Image (cartoon, rainbow, N blue to C red):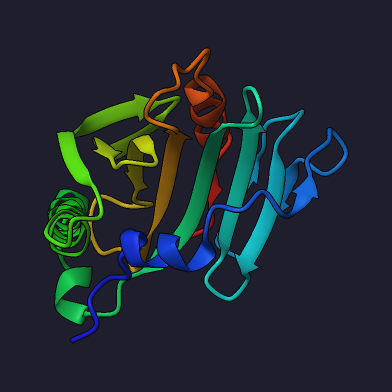
Length: 196
């Protein structure tokens, strides 16, 4: 039964390359049929790998010599199961986050690809919008990642879709992060406008 699209599976499809268009003050607004965003500048690059599913990937590489990759991903996630459409936003968010964690364990941890730690689920207000969150860290021999998953629902219940926003900081295990771009991610979330 097709329930929800998994961000973990979709993220592996769009990759982490820094290809795409450089974001400037003249092209930093993106518009899809169901949502729009104002993106950060300068240094970030935008790719739209899946127009039909309204996917946008924003990437910045930094550090000597470009050893850190910062990435924001925005996805409209459809709800196809009529039973799930009747659930509250919190129920859908809990189901989705539980599924994400299970997939990371089954397809990453159990297969020896990475270790998963510091998984924390919660809620967070960003501007005037409530997001259901899941923050976690993965580590492998070649890379360490700190990531945050933010889910936004247009309504408290009866949603046919919700927004998935994912922010990650990926660095080699022996490199210290000189700065975070989490504030740029949160600023981008503040600009989110959804057309239900």
